[in-house]
Every structure is written in structure tokens, then in C-alpha cells.
Image 1 (cartoon, rainbow, N blue to C red):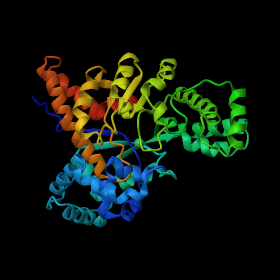
Image 2: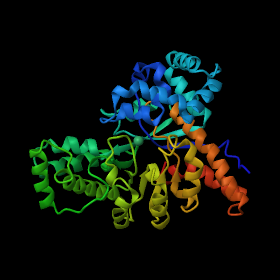
Image 3: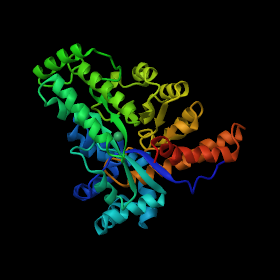
Image 4: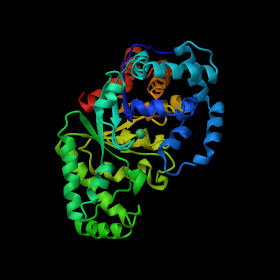
Length: 389
Ligand SMILES: [Zn+2]
């Protein structure tokens, strides 16, 4: 059986801001591919194989999510479900009024607010600008610590770097629209966070600088771990949630040190801080589900599984909701360039929750009312509750 979540509001708990002029400047014919994992990585990764762009484009034709997106958009735009017709109709809608088009997509899936990680793209796109681009749908800020580390280390000394970094974190915390901090240390020196004394971090800083800021675990890691721990203390002081990228990502990821198990000791150590595992450890969902089932203050955000593990979402949600309290699970899209991502991701998750939670009702684990309450929570209510918005 299926439960009915058709009128549930959505909060997208992990996405990235875009600029309208960037949206309009990209190749209209390749927008479907930019919604795929391979296409997104071509934009975001320093290690992507750009000479394979034509091949990546061709692969969209055998990617189920790409083909579904084309058909769904054809129905939404009222055109033939061919690549040419959808590209033409979409481009016309975008050029007529990019803001109205984005708003129409978000309204169609009842996306009422988004939580935007401003660390990508760089330079940072201001919250207000993205809110205008989405036609007034509420945008909440997530401040990423890595750009602040880059800025702070220019201070030229370790003590100066720590002081400048703390100042940047404090400034961000003074903005009430900043609802969480974020780290992508999994992309840099890994999630197995050490606890170096400041003398050790200081010596590492000198070596790191002498090494031309090469991102090594030998020189960069003690400094990054030290500063991440400073940010954790400031997040606690200012009562902010911490978002931590856990799991795979684009090809820049340090995949050997990106698993939920790598960050587990830090999570055990800081159980007084609400920590959201962004991407729920994807593809290591089972590990993340275990972690969130045994530590009360650890939460899971499911982007990457959504939309890029499109055919695994039922299995993934069954695995997660089969062990983790529903209130600790958030929908997210990881949208980073195209407004269709908000829409398609919400659509995928809403339908999946209806099937998965419906099966929980069939198994006599939940009543229909309980299943619907949990489903509404995952789509939007949980992210609102944790972040106080
Ligand atoms: Zn992201």
C-alpha cells in the first residue's frame, strides 16, 4: 500500500546557491547532463576529465534519472518528451523569466525553504541574492569553514591564522540567518580528526606554508583538525548545528578517509553538539544509519542518494528508517546549478517515502497516521525543528 504525502511541505536541507546570470550563461543543451552526478562533477571538481564531456553527455541517454527527468519536465512544460523539445521549452521558460520558472518548479513540489551551503560555488553568493533567484522562497545560510581557513592562513603566522579564523566564525555566528556551520574536511585531509596540541599545529602550519600549502596529511591535517575543533567549540557557544560532509562526492574527495566510521570517534566525543552527516555517508548508508541509531545527536541528510542513487532511494530509506528515529532524517537535493534539481529530488523522495512507509504500515510497524507524520518530518518538518526555523 501507499500512504499519501502529496500535500506535505518540503524543506531542502542541503543545496548550493546559484546566480541567475550563471544559469543563463551555461549551455542550454547540456542542462540534463548537469543534473546528473557525472555532469555536476564536471562543474565542481578539479579532477574531472573535461575532455570526456561529450561522452558524459552521451551517457545521460542511458541514465534512468536523466530519462525520467526529461519525461517529467516535458509534462511540466507541456512539450514532446524528446531531448530537443525539452531543451527548447526549458530554455524558453528560463529566458522569459528565470526567477518565475524556478519559483514555479519549487511551488509545484511545495518546496517552502532551502538550506544553502554557501561554500560552493566560490566566491560566495549572498543569501539574499539566491533568495531573489528563487522568487522569494526562504534561503537559510550554512557557513563553510574551509574558505575561512584559506582567508585566515594568509595572516602569515599560526597565531594570526587562529585569531582571524575565530573572528570569521564569530562574524558568521552574529548573523541570525546563518543556521549551521559546515565542513568538507573529507575533501581535504580526511574525517579521522586528530587532537593536536597548539604547539604541534603551529609547527605543522610552518611546514604547510613552506610546502606551498600542499594539501598533505603530514602538514595540512594538524592545522585543519585544530581549526575544525575551534569551530566546534564556537558552534556550541553560539548554539549552531554542524553539517559535516560524510561519504563520497565529486572526484576531489579523499575517499580513503570519508566514511562514517572515520568520523565516529569525533561524534562520540561531541555528543552535546547536533551534527548532521550530509549525504548520510552515501554510498556507506548502512554505516551512517548505524551511527545515527546509536548516537542521539547525529542526524542524516540524504542528498547524493537523492537524486543520483535514484533507483536506490527506496532501499536507502528502508535501510535508514528501518533503524534511525524518523525525526533525525532530512530530505536534501545537493542542487548546485539547475533549479530542476529541487523539483525532481522532492518528487523522487515524496514518492519513495509513500512506498517505503506504506510498506511499514503493511508490516504492522506503523499506523497510517504515524507513517504520514514520519514522512512529513523527513520531507520538511525535521530540518525546520533541528535548525529552529
Ligand atoms: Zn553539496
